[in-house]
Image (cartoon, rainbow, N blue to C red; front, side, top):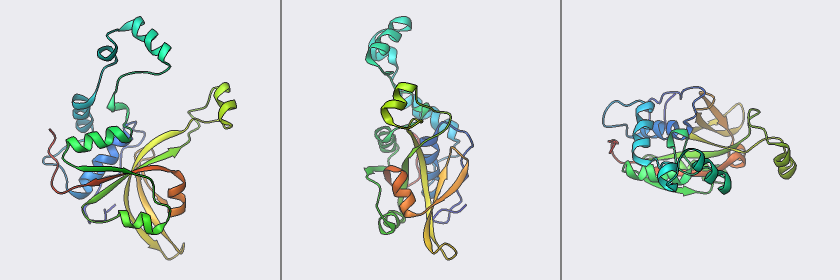
Length: 208
């Protein structure tokens, strides 16, 4: 596939848990590139070294004591960016890489989505998705009124084109979960997008 600045971008690996890393890696590769050859695996390693916060260090406990703290809190503490990134962590990592980064609400129409696509700007989209592998427990199913957990999945907005056969503008999204480039109308994309990470890029990225 070709990006909107006519530089080749690789299809992301199939079945990868590192969706945010792949989306960011592809956005950088499509626009300004890296200062030296780099794999997604090395990119994730560097993010872990720079950004990870261990639960042990945060709580001053480990083993069964840590498990008890997390059980009482009701969630796991610490950060492992190798398991993916939320909007806040993506923006922090992009800033450390020398990129401008801002989180926006998703556009509502063609004009809004098309306006995002321009030279020097790349866009990551946080999608709300469901997957049959991630089912609610009975109590949560009763509470939410549906069977599946909401998943937040990072993808890269590759570009857009007007489709004569469909009579609509289609947006190309690189998806590390499926290993494919998917196509959405503006209406479909607005319905599933939770937010957009807008990245400003000016020069090749050199890892800190």
